[in-house]
Image 1: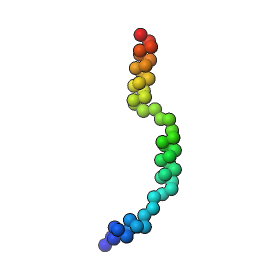
Image 2 (image 1 turned 120 degrees about the horizontal axis):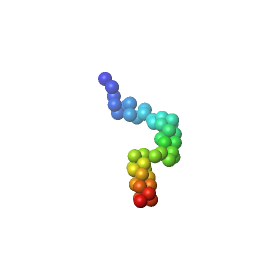
Image 3 (image 1 turned 60 degrees about the vertical axis):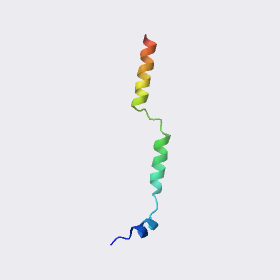
Image 4 (image 1 turned 90 degrees about the vertical axis):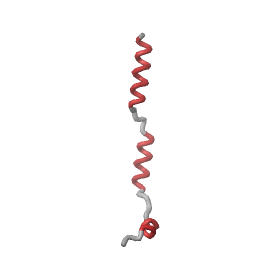
Length: 47
């Protein structure tokens, strides 16, 4: 039978996960809200 408490004591997070997470958060990624705001801004300046 698996001893969950013992297994959790042995667990340590992968350093690669932290590195990848940091790289993702540093990216200036465009999302749907950014696209919508830019479209609205362009629409207002066109009028």
